[in-house]
Image 1 (tube, rainbow, N blue to C red):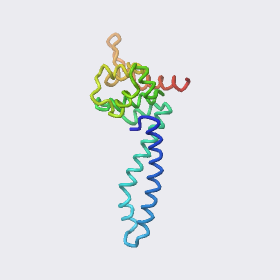
Image 2 (spheres, one colour; image 1 turned 30 degrees about the vertical axis):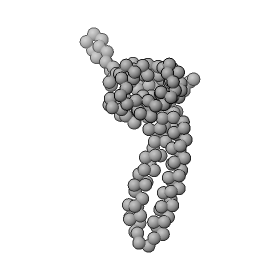
Image 3 (cartoon, rainbow, N blue to C red; image 1 turned 180 degrees about the vertical axis):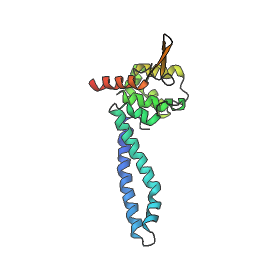
Length: 175
C-alpha cells in the first residue's frame, strides 16, 4: 500500500520503468523464432501481472488522495477485518486529506513515529490507540466492528459507516 507522496512518486516511476522493461521483453521474445505467440504471452504473464498490480496500487492511492471514500470499501469490503486495521488507518488518513506529519501533530507525536507505524502497518496497535487515531481523523464513531447499532423503542437501526466517511471526505473537498 502506498502511504505517502514520496512512495506515490516512486511507484509512478516504477510503473513507467516496468512498462518499458515489459515492452523490451516482449520485443526480444517475439524476435526469437522459437516461441509461439502463446508461449510469449505465457512468458510475459508474471511480469504483466506484477505491472498491473503496481498500476492498480497507484490508481488506488490517487482515488484515496482525491477523497474517494468508496475506495476504502473497494479495498477492504463492506466489513473490514481486524487484521486490516493498519492498512485501514492509513487509507482513512489519506482519504481525510492528512499527511503523516499532520496526523503526528494531531496526535502530539513525532512525524517519524507515524511514518514508522505506517511502514509497519500499525502492527500490534492497541484498540485505544487505533480509536485515538480514528478520533483525530474525525471518524472515531464509524468503525466500531461494522455498523453501529442503536435501539429505539425496540427497533434497531444500522448506521452505515460509509455515510460518516462520505461526510468527512465532503468536508475535506470543501476545505
